[in-house]
Amino acid sequence: MKLFSKEQIYEGDRLTTERQNISSTDLMERAGTQIFNWMHMRMQGAQVPVHVFCGIGNNGGDGLVLARHLTTHGYNVITYVVNYSETRSKDFLINYDRIKNVSKDWPKMMTNSANFPKIHKDDIIVDAVFGIGLNRPPAEWVAEIFQKFRASSAFTLSIDIPSGLYTDKAIANENAVVHANYTLSFQSPKLVFFLPETAKFTVQWEVLDIGIDRDYLVNTETEAELISKFEILPLYKPREKFAHKGNFGHALIIGGSHGKIGAVNLASRSCLSSGAGLVTAFVPECGYHSLQASIPEVMVLTDKEERYISDIKFNIEPNAIGIGIGLDTREETMKALESFLEINKNNLVVDADGINIIARKKSLLKLLPPQTILTPHPKELERLIGKWSDDFDKLDKVKSLSSMYNLIIVVKGANTVIVYKEKIYINTTGNPGMATAGTGDVLTGIITGLIAQGYEPLPATLFAVYIHGRSADIAVEDYGYQSLIASHIIETIGEAYIDLFKPPEQTTEPAQEQEEQQ
Ligand SMILES: NC(=O)C1=CN([C@@H]2O[C@H](COP(=O)(O)OP(=O)(O)OC[C@H]3O[C@@H](n4cnc5c(N)ncnc54)[C@H](OP(=O)(O)O)[C@@H]3O)[C@@H](O)[C@H]2O)[C@H](O)CC1
Ligand SMILES: [K+]
Image (cartoon, rainbow, N blue to C red; front, side, top):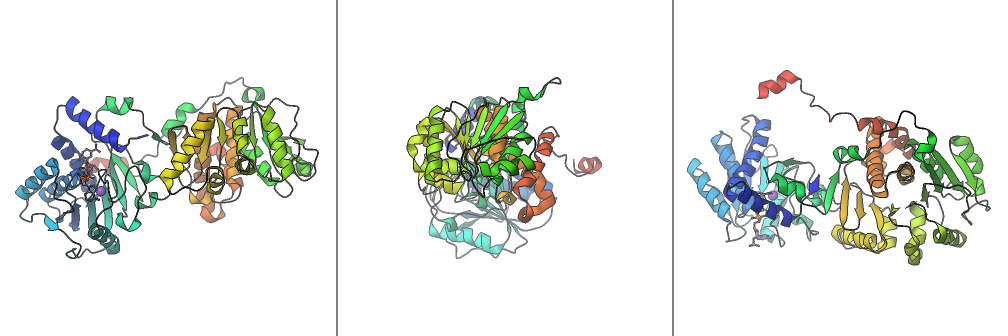
């Protein structure tokens, strides 16, 4: 799913009104009516007090359209105008007049937070104060109103975006943002719904289709894209009936040091479970017996050193190499990695201490083959790109590193983000249970295994991050967040593959109930 920028949304609006020969007021009527339909479906006439807070722009206009429909359908609605500016948008004014024609209780003007109404925790708040037009911090009294929303504990529904959130930059003051229980966003979700610092303001979100021009939506390239089953399924490579293990490549996993052979164990197993035909592990001598005993399917080559990697030499022709897990960053190992990178031409996935070594000696970056994949967790990323001031600054730094060295960078997080040059892909699978030792090793194995099978590096990365998270979502159902461990994620990779072909979950309501609601 494409994530359109603020500028692209405004452009889409303009083109839609032109091509469909409608006014912006008609488009606002569509938007507000869609919000009303969503609420009406769920409220079914319930007389819960609905407090609609409107700004003076088009987000506010949406709120007035909603309030008008709630009123004419007999709901218990109270409308407020948060009067933070004297400049009203045209469509706000048109809808301000329209609502006055259908209700004797005209919208209440608010110019400070003192006359904030009493709101019961079972009431509903609709936040139509700011939309994507927010371009400077809200006034203090407006921020106080947002804080009173939260203090009321009432269910808060934000229109388009929680007010106080910018679409394209970090927020200065978290107290000046609405905490939405639910956000109904027009045409596409916004990037800030998925970034670590701002995702918390949008607990749940849903996209409402307001009929923006289809050609525009299809033909407009966006910087950011949401990756879910729909985008992953077309990447899947089916298997021929008469396939044999040679068709699915030979992956090499290089890593491990005394006490950290398990990382290579996890990566090698997940590499096999991702479908690689053959997997070889290259480890210090101390890892030989444990690997051969624990994963008979994996072949093992060893370094001449007992406890750490000192000289990476192998007599196989791998199709893909995953390197860095459990590697250790001592001098001899750093030298071994440098000598390896000087001659390596293979597709490469670099993780963990592999990244830490490169972060220490940045000149190694230019030795990485095109489309090398780096999979840093936040601490490793900071060592690589330095400190960042906020999520947007982080993404800018990652994009420039990616462009400079032609790298694919996996920025692990609650929504893992894959960055390739100027493009951002946001994964939608995964859960907090994955914050446990070894899940990164498992991901490295899956990416390496997919490349070994012939997936190009970027699709392999998108696919692997998706499957890794989906597999953890399946496993967490049995183990819960606290008890999920990396090995469990390997066990459910198969189910995650099978899940790709299951139709999206049907609603649990029996068919006849759905008919009754028509
Ligand atoms: N295709 C769609 O998605 C549609 C979305 N719709 C809705 O339109 C809003 C965007 O509306 P817009 O009028 O552009 O902006 P806002 O309503 O978010 O803001 C109103 C104006 O307020 C001014 N502003 C910005 N920040 C502040 C601030 N901190 N304090 C005071 N005033 C502020 C700014 O105007 P200026 O001239 O003062 O800069 C804003 O323009 C979108 O989110 C949807 O809800 C359409 O209804 C239909 C199509
Ligand atoms: K809003």
